[in-house]
Length: 117
Image 1: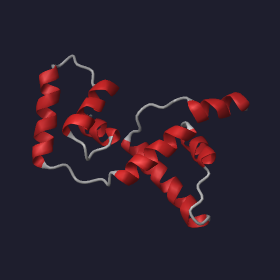
Image 2 (image 1 turned 180 degrees about the vertical axis):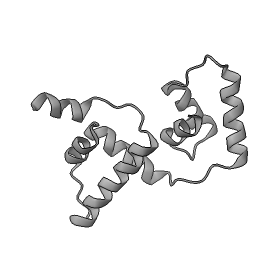
Image 3 (image 1 turned 135 degrees about the vertical axis):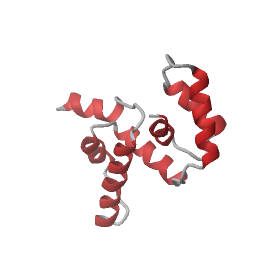
């Protein structure tokens, strides 16, 4: 059990899918309704099967960047970028970091990955 807890607190920090992001928001909102703004991040991590820090970090990013619909121009820019990478390209964390910091500052990494896929 201790190994599992340590892994869930410090490991498995891949990008969140949109479904995971939505689940995280629901779980955290449940805590906020029940206990006057106290969130048990260890429990959130267990429920998500993710690290405690990863869940906390993802939630903070979501608070800082409210989700906005994709504009036609953003869609076109993203499509052209991915097309320029070529058919064999793999969009990994480095590519998503570049897109988020350079072209889509108001989008989360999960939003960008979800839109690409």
